Length: 320
Ligand SMILES: Cc1ncc(COP(=O)(O)O)c(C=O)c1O
Image (cartoon, rainbow, N blue to C red; front, side, top):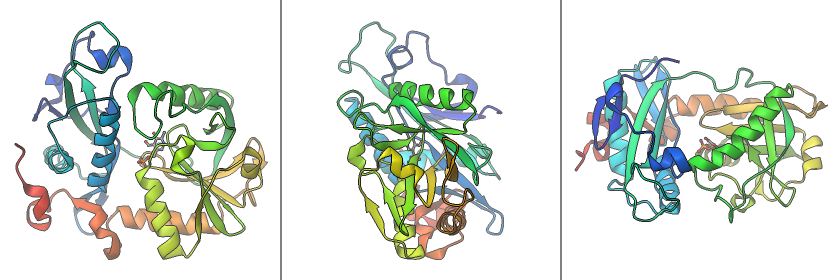
């Protein structure tokens, strides 16, 4: 993985080598940070790079920071503008991944969330697939349990809680699986290690509700709209038992990183036919058309990087 050339750091874009923090930084020691993950998709016909749903990502980012009592001097529009500026400076002509981070920059000892100073950094780098086999994943039900809302709120993207995700992911991969499905303390499916979960049963798409200790995923909402409005599949949000997963007709993970990955086996049991199912396949194709800015109806979700100046008036305000 090559490093970015630039970073948004302390309110301006600087060479990446200048975006440095000390080893005593609060967030590095205590996990007291909130982060985001966005993707930019290169559309070769339009010669344009589209950042997918940046305002929705930054709304969740600011909410995650709010859970950590952070006071940030930026709003959704500021962060969207800074991101588009940064990505333009990187001059990507390929798909990319954008990583905003809100962190307590104080170099100090003491576990707390108050009397600390929050900062934001953003970087962007070329990025391909997060999992190698997006059409044929073998998942396992993890023995780790998802962090509970009263432990570390899973609805926010909070740095420290990714230890929970990393434990589940590493155990799954070391046991020969591609990804983990993590249950919550009630024994219901929450999500994957870093992606939301859907299954199809009786032709209906079923997703765990956001009260099941899941991240409030942007891709999860996107899939809900596309399933209902474009594929014509009913979507139900309700708790999912472990054994329902084994009996599903289809199942998939979705998220900015994983994009949309078909789960074809869980714990050595075939899901449906053991091959990517028809609803998953249609949705997957549509999803990639949408994020790449090829579906006019959903172009409002795609923020153009290079044409931003003339095409997206609200995005061109200058940073304060
Ligand atoms: C734990 C977890 N769940 C779900 C997701 C998917 O969220 P989104 O669609 O907003 O990227 C992520 C994404 O990074 C994640 O880390």
